[in-house]
Image (tube, rainbow, N blue to C red; front, top):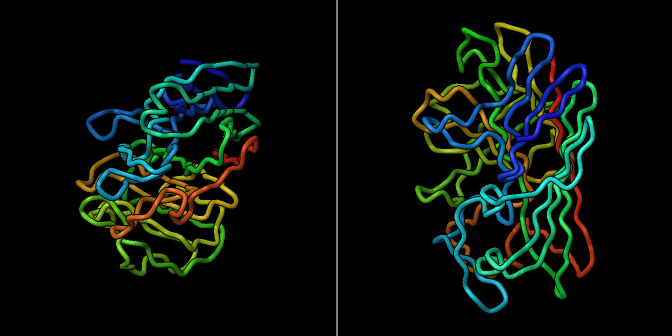
Length: 291
């Protein structure tokens, strides 16, 4: 584990998955990130790469072959290495290797940077194509935000606040975790009240949100945390369907799960990122702590 702090926040990041494990307020010790208790979910904030979500049948096709990958890919369970650090910055890297090439036929370098700036945790992703051919991938975030944040409150005291008015229907998921072609009206305005029943059908998936900031707030206290992710075309929101978990995942994505009837190649999948030889893809997601 690696820890950095400034005058406002302290964060801890694990080398496994370059996973952010804790965001703590210096002033009062408030924790904003779920601790990965396996009773509910064994992660805190995994990166999703080189796919987001589930594949149809757990398989995909690329370069004339068929491959198997678990949901959300392999980066979240891979060992990154810390190759640079300062008082307020940590930079981790993962490169393709013999193991990744067996399940993903592209050579890449993935860098994840964490930087503290005041009350913000800035997270930068950089994917480089180090292959001799075009590569294809998706990448996304899956941070589990404490919900409620304040002690002695309940999940249904909380709500999501969007920075733009929305009128959006979610894409429903099948029993296998792929996307269906059905939609259910879900957001109308700038707020979505949270309750566990909302997630009985699994994650809420959207492909048309105008907002680029989503904030977890409570109607009983003032603490909040905002996930800011500009130019991410897809968003997911999730808590375990059985109810009772003390977190809500706020998930900005570049890419999404397969549709239930998708049988094409990875390069033809909706939302896939295509990267030419020698090029890089860079994006940023931020956590903003309110008080």
